[in-house]
Length: 399
Image (cartoon, rainbow, N blue to C red; front, side, top):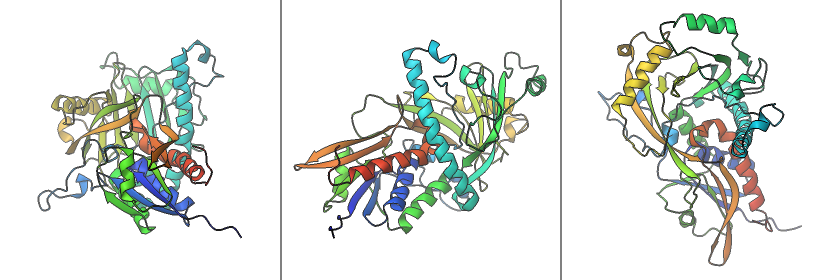
């Protein structure tokens, strides 16, 4: 009988939602042959909603670079045009590549939604909840206009429905005074929302309970991860760092500013405004309040909340969602949130690389660059990353 291969020693860089999900899935898929360590500069921290500042000092807030702690987070699909669509041929090469990227992300998101909804049903303590999703668009793109009731939108069983013209007319009549802000397209479907602090803490605890190890350290490059397992015979590095930790000209930062309020809403609802701004409400399960947003500012490195943006977001929420509160003063603000989402132009980097060190070829499996879609793509992306890890761990795998 052939000798059994020695265990792999894996280091997962990053404790964001992609890193935590990948580490947990690796444990599940490779229970007998893998020792796993997560190395990261920060780990999940408590929500400000759970801390009474009058009696207990607030725990240190996550840095703006730890984007998973500042996410809403909900699943709002981004539709795409397939090559079979009559308008696809009129798109430029760049636009077609973008549609291809959206198609790939759609499949990752569908797989993630299946797992998220399963967790919501079987483990409500994860902070995931299934709830209605609603979208109102004032300037709908062709991708949305091509959708029909019954299409697969957020998941295979999401009950997707395009809101009828009659219903939209009724909605617009309620806001006749708001000239130029009329809804042109809308839809409803079943989706999920996440209390990010609860969920990431649950993932971390699950990882630790299965024998995982964590090291808190700020790395400056991927190679430094090997210092965490200096005696490893068969090391593999899984790079789920937010910024990539490798020279990557496609990496960008997207600044997002939102507001957490104690008021609790009943659905995750998004409004696309004709002026290009967005307003959304994302309830957090288990009494986690509601996130009001938001901004999407590519290349903006400001880490502090801007008062003028806070005012605009709150004013817009009152105008767009009058059934939530009737006046800004009715909001019970808990915190202003600023996250720096690590986004990669062209989509996530999920591929195998290598590091040559001391004459050894060490596999590096990359999985980073989801931007604001980390939760939405997490399980689907983790599955792809795990496949590459398994392939890279074979004795004669070509990198």
